[in-house]
Amino acid sequence: MPTRTTRKALRGTGLVLAAVLALGGCSLGGGNSGTERAGSGPRGGDGGPSAPAEARAPYDVAPLIEPAGKYFGAAVDGAPTSMKPVEAYTSMTGKRPNLVEYYAAWGDGFNAAGVRNAWGTGALTLMSWEPFDVTLADIAAGKEDTYLKSYAAAVRKLNLPVVIDFADEMNGPWEKWGTRHVTPRQYVAAWRHIHDTFAAAGATNVIWAWSPNVVEPMPDVRLKPYYPGDAYVDWVGLVGYFSGPRATSFDAVFGRTIREVRDFTAKPVLLLETAADPGARRPADVRHLFEGVEGDDDVIGFVWFNYDKRADWRLEASPSGLELFRKLAADDRFGFDVRNPR
Image (cartoon, rainbow, N blue to C red; front, side):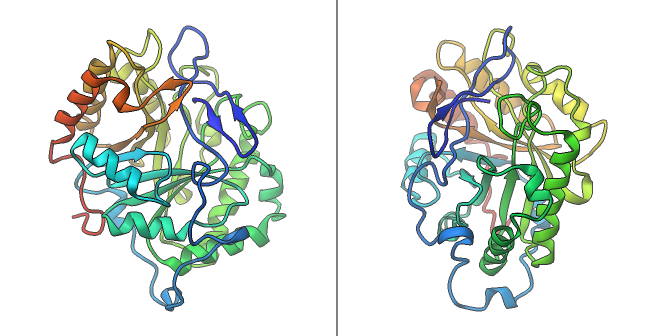
């Protein structure tokens, strides 16, 4: 994965398909990309307005898990606390994202206002939850339950759909929750405890995305031991970039990982974080991305990581790539109003 901005400092992470462990362009800890999160309070946050949303039946997320269309997602700095970056992205690409990803650190409050902001424009929010300052063993043992229960209650109170991706890229050595620090058993125990805590709070309005990095940088790390089980996962969210000399096709970037995942689950696949190196090859990579997602019914969409981190993954960094991206994004198969997914 790519370079992230944590609450303390930039840190490097590994990425895909290079002769050596390449670095890509990924998540940003410390909440919503370093911005203030309106409507979120400390250690659990503001679950939304005082209306008794929690008294209503939990939002049924089933139609969003396997939608008829494809998700057209974006991770852009400042969203969804502010939707102005999404408006700019919409103007640039000619299509409004219907999935908005942001990065939050363990300990941050739930960004209820941001989720409402995105929902108001017909977009689902995806939160990448990164446990920088806590061990997964402590989470699994219930030592973080005060925070966790408060967070789950806030999500239930808001009662809008939200996607949660916890501790992604666990199959790489660059994360504090990765292979150098955490065993598969510890990872699965923490994931299941979080999921069970949300279920106990009635927060079934969550779509759970389990998100390994693509396997090429770590060919000897098997994914199945890290999988929490179908009862705990709704989406397989892959992290992979068109980066390096070997990343010359959709199959080269994602194929081996998808095939390995299919050995143990049939859950829908979302390309939870992707982009392409800037330069002459980007138009070809953009075409590979769209054609690959279109061509696989099990792949329900992608999120473009529109940041300048280690490489300039922003679409605007490559006019020719942006031109083709805009043309391919016009396809009606990409993007739909998540408030009416059928």
